[in-house]
Length: 197
Image 1: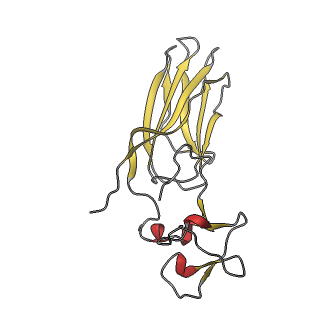
Image 2: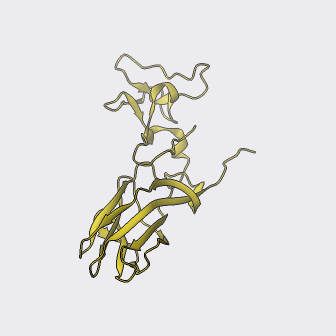
Image 3: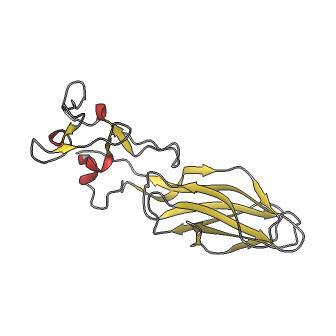
């Protein structure tokens, strides 16, 4: 069953009912008279158990067998690594003298509770110090990083404790009479193939 990975913010954590049933020739899980999918088509349970569709007429992903088989409810074949899972690359700048939010990624489908986070910062002057830090839901969770370089300096941190729906944020500020520039705010991972034997 494929999972979209083009962007955390856009991923839809639900599946159409047409994809829910396994084994039928056309892959369709028929609805009953109440526009519900019989639970027998979704997971182990009595034939009369029902799964109510959500407001978009989709099956809640929590009811699918594939997730019931995972102890932590997440796809454990993903881990912190070097491949780009999601990117917010555009350059942003600020002249703020106190910590200010510059970039935000809202976590949809979560590959792992520990994320490898990459970002790049530079000073506008090449002499005044600029600072940046990763936040979660408005609270600092990363290490304060700084530079006086007027060319981009890259930082990478592994930060745990993330949940679906969290906001991953990059905050920063400058000292002196310069601007802080940030770019390439990314979540990095390693994708391990899952195969049957």
